[in-house]
Image (cartoon, rainbow over all chains, first blue to last red; front, side, top):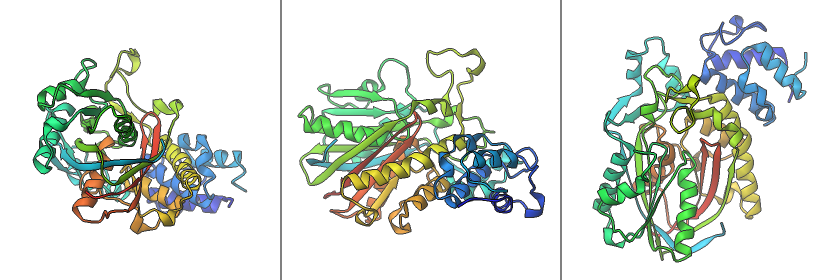
Length: 82
Length: 328
């Protein structure tokens, strides 16, 4: 399954325990208190489920610091559409 | 390793660090931590630390005392000792030799250390089973012991709420009705830098000589998620098995988040997935033997149960072994 911006923002909000209206494409680890190590692992876990195991094959996902980084990594494997 | 017959696990004992710590109490040193969120993701409520002067060898010696008091086994019967640790007392001598002396085990003993973490028990079980099968020894102890707490500063939010100090003792003997194996093992050293204690060995990197545990949780998680489910699936297919045919899955008890993610990917039913470290923590190489012991104490492990033990972590190193449980 491919993700879009809406579904990605929902994943970030849920994983970081943030309100969805706090999250946008400019959100990053530095702007969200809940986007710590555990929050990032939750994001990775949910992405992997939604992409049916494909996300865990993207090595750059571990280092992503922002929503934009996540989009770039997902696009590299054709798992994100605008 | 092929399936080995005519051997048995004769008993398991364990010991935890003497200081019991409620994870909630870590907030005293770290008022900014959202402890509730941490516990909800790791699933770990309690951890155990050794005192400042207590080492992994000390913990192992106590676990051995527990073992010989809990089981009808004579020290004179022991002819093998494998000590699994990454917290040795010294680079040299070998900790297993120190343990032989302190625990008054026979001198006619094959004894050595294995430097492995979370996959250490699975790989050692294979080594010990092979030693017994080859006739090298008849009664071999696997002793796992770690004191990772000594590598973790009190403000480390990634590692502090997770790791416990603990030791386990497992006796594997010739004879009996267990079947151990087959096994499959793997290593990916390219990930070594993601779980490491810089300054703990002879390599001197001036910028990182802090002797503290560094874990890149995201990298370890991705490695686990991309490697372990595939490994288990292939193992099951190669051995004409399926999730349905396995009674219980004993993964290394890393954290609830990791175990749930891996099991979801494998479609393992909840009742087959063992998660029992809520009040113990992640004891590294001891998590699997402690899990087995807890199951045994609850009478939930039965003769002829087919169980899979799966270790993974530092190295990066991993392994899977099938065990047909016997009379214990």
